[in-house]
Length: 119
Image (cartoon, rainbow, N blue to C red; front, side):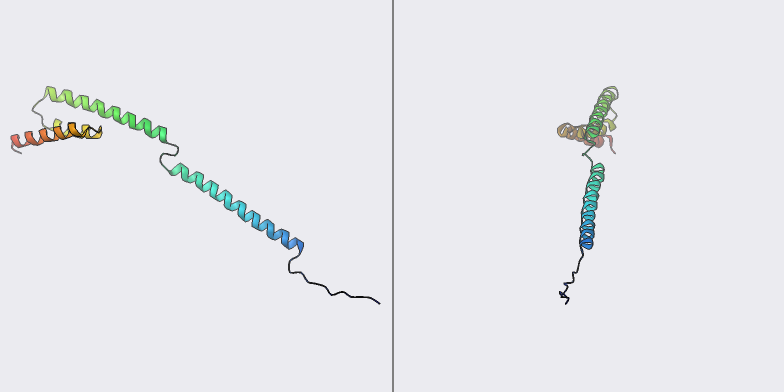
């Protein structure tokens, strides 16, 4: 006499479970890799993350150029005192160099001289 035990059918076999775990892990790993690479790419696009030194050097160079222009226009004003455009240039350069009071003075001188010339 042979005894037949009832068989319990399983939904997932061991191979299917391992395959499911591998698929889930692969999805997680690919998501992590995608996030890391996208962060790296975005950092390169954001100003200041890697280019702070270059921007700082460029700003220092620009300040130097503005100071040279300022000296040029101050000397020009001494040579040609009747040339009113120099007041406008000086006002612009002083404002670029964050010297608001001097800029305002030059602007007022320009307005005053412009009124005298009849334009």
